[in-house]
Length: 187
Image (cartoon, rainbow, N blue to C red; front, top):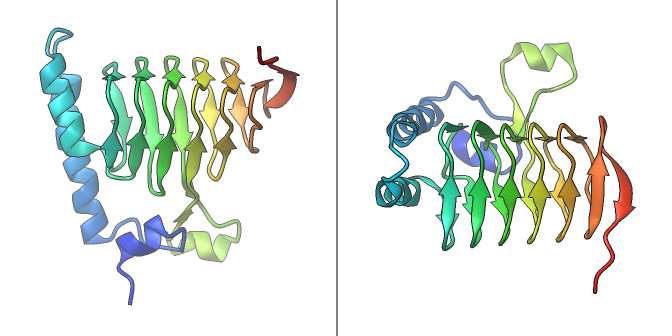
């Protein structure tokens, strides 16, 4: 029988009030409180805290405080990752981010979903869908990436976009809901 945590990361219905899941959230809050209180010159402390916290990260990790997420352990980022101020990752399912990705201020990435049927919603259970972001992606400030979305390599997400569908490689998307507004020519 799967634990609630295993159900959560597998995308199945789970109880977010389960004691193991609650412990993970509390651990996240504790580590992030310390992280968000660091001074800019405490880069080594920041890196050490993120190494303890994230599922995986590559070289040259830079996350501007304040940063918030649910668990941390479900977040994997590649090399040369930059995350500006006030970003929020709800990582009930895996969030996988490639190399050379830049996030503007206030970017939100969501994986949790709630049932459409009111009877199921009333149980308090939810499920989650993973988010995948490729290499060389730029996401503008206040963009929202919805559950289950994959963003292709070289994509640019306009500021304030609400991304509800997959984004192909080398495209610029913007708007609510986000739509392709152009493709990026490769040299």
